[in-house]
Length: 439
Ligand code: PGA
Ligand code: ZN
Image (cartoon, rainbow, N blue to C red; front, side):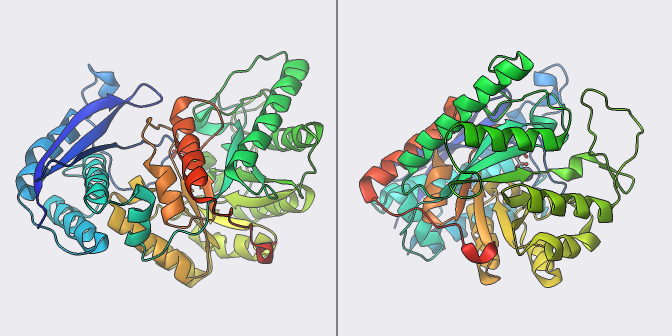
């Protein structure tokens, strides 16, 4: 029976140059594998706790030496010698449950969700090798399914909010190629739109190609509407029909501009007046509805703030027949919050980020819950990423409808797209369809 022989970890740097955790899991018999974890900037309050050193003299408090120690000392002591048996699912849950119990806090604040997820993922890789499975098949086994499709890509074109200079408050305007048949064709399509958008921005704003945290463009638009219209224009100028060949998504990330019951949609861009009028929840819903009616938007993420529970069902009623009502900060890949959202009818789609949950097993439960309610599932990476590509395998293995991986520049994004290209070459599975029933 296989046993964990050694768990080790180290601090590495993510795509923003901030420390994060990489762990290695060695099994008895010579198999060893590593994995690293990402980190968000526009985080939800209910996310599992990312343990940082808090030493202002080093990486401004962002060091991960405590989390590294959690792996090297605590997790190693608890898990070395653990025998695991049977199928990938029971072995993975045995390891994950042991770590959750050892931490004992619920939020993973003692050992750190960054430490625990790095170990969970490194174990997954090692155990996949032990079973002779490509990682996406191992992940599929965790979700009790057979891989049969590739995710549709939802690609960051423009960034604002916490991922850019804050010129517009909304965080992403994304393009979603609806009719492409392959990952390969989707990426080529996205390249065309991205380059066209960059040319328009250079002409109109005199701004050369400057990118935001996820590799998207960050034009100095005055309003969110201007940014959405720019995306519609770029899609058309690139030779595609907006709304048919390419639809749009927005990550409003509205928790981050919601204060004292008001949504400050004016942001901090040119002409913004601090303390100016804000929108109440009803007015915000009306604004989002107007966007969905006026623009080819099929997905609205975090249209309302994470604690504005009361109004989420109203938002769902207002736009749910036309667009995905996607919960990120609202749900935090947290089974309790997803359950509450299902009961309230708050949304119809889950943004699944594994590090919000902290282990693969808990994220798999979030997936199962969302699927049981018939929701669309979008597997998402974070704004701070590493060159690790497990998220691509996860999107395929878990049959995600869409994969949200930022833009099509920067190696931490491309590692995942390139991995998808390889999986596609090996399997030729069809891309998942955007479900017309949601229109
Ligand atoms: P984050 O942003 O990774 O910075 O939290 C991603 C998102 O909000 O979808
Ligand atoms: Zn989001």
